[in-house]
Length: 367
Image (cartoon, rainbow, N blue to C red; front, side):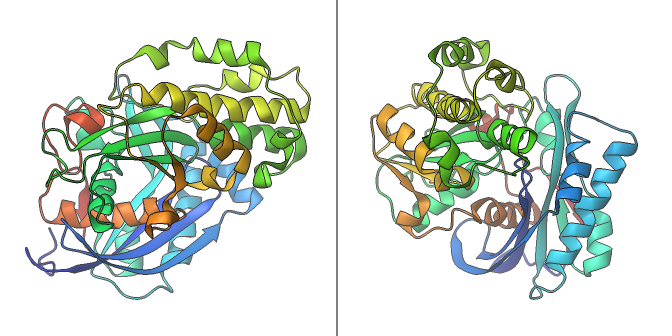
């Protein structure tokens, strides 16, 4: 732990997130004591260039080697370029870039050297958030649920709610904000719902040379292929009880299922698969949430949002309706988790990752 960070009081932390959808790096400042959100600070974003995106993508599914090292270098350079001009803070939470995730086999790999980042930025950095959880039998994902719990309490919510993050992979956090601590029984249930933007983004890139389906315009022109959707929902993953997690490429065959379809029909079908995975996931919630709050890039796709509203039995709204920033929630989450790590507080528990006991992951590197 950094001695400059006292055991009590507010900490100004900067969180950074690079997701599997490969759009770019998000950064956000958060003031927190590790329990409550005290204030939201400035945010920033740096998109990856097509060349950088290609280098990182070449490392997906790999655990070591030249492609992994090249991806790590791109990730570190992008983070330094974004974070260095931002305001000075007490602590940085650096997630890195997930290249491979197989918690029951090899483990989990997020590239980017937090110690090197601490030296280059002259600030303590908390990183490698997932390894300790995996080593104790957890899935290592999702990690934002403890922050979602703090968000629900910050917003003054009085009934169970679900946060649905639609990045490269979808994940759901069911929250009871009336339970005081996130690690306490009944506070949280979290797990990955299935693929979200990653297959759609891959389809757009491979067929049309575009990074994503902007505004769902392509999917809006297509028709859903029901046979492909039924094959998708027959995947054993959906029958597994949570907690459970996915790697970005676990459902790579989705793109093959739509391989013979037109561009528009393929986009519509992949969008429907994302929504169907969420609908399946809702069956695991301890109680029907009062609403589903959507964060991540998927909330900007009106076709996907309409599919969710039709298939779920509760209101579906972007997180902005309760005053949060859906583009920056994950970056803010790693600022929050960094402070918890520095103060020896847990960052995951049995109902979020399946870990055997509430555990605080993360390594603290001083400059």
